[in-house]
Image (cartoon, rainbow, N blue to C red):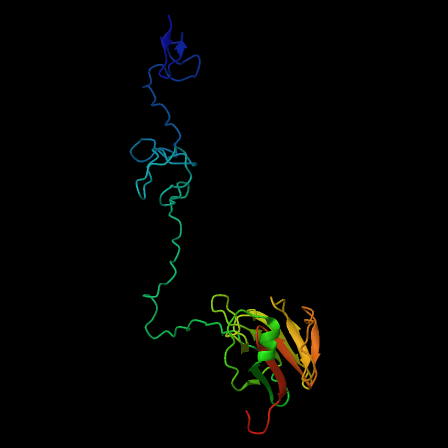
Length: 255
């Protein structure tokens, strides 16, 4: 006849267990405790932790926005589901209202108006502009001839002088504005000097630029466009329907 020892073994002996040797009449021993599980808290329950690569429920604990499962960052506030922290806020740029009242403010930079920057010619030179009836008759213009009157004397203050007619819409401001003569182009010709001599260059005008002497017939051949031609002391420049220009040194007290 077999009996069960206190350890739970079947034994035929009545005094000591055939398997473990424990006394058959000894009280049953309590089972040894199980090793501690670090994942079990004090309440004996396993804590629920979200996966390392995203939220468990999809709801951001910072702003409550629902995100896709396993998202690494909140799409709304940038909350980091892996580390459980918000991104560092970016400091906004200071506005004009945030600046101190006594902080100096640089004035806006205004570009200077472009002017004729060529150096002045040596000595005092003038352009004597006159309405020439003979040139007018030779041009056969249909415009009425203005009264010739006396010549207009203009000081030449730069070594490069533009001859033409002003146009505000096109930004053209000639140094010698001959706007009353409609036979002159907006950018008609250019006068230049080396300090002692003057040259004229036609800028592709409609009616051409002519150079002729003080005596004899009026010139018939225009100056080739883009070519500088010297104006000798006894010569004058003819442009438009009636304009004649003489370049000379200023008389004492004239300028």
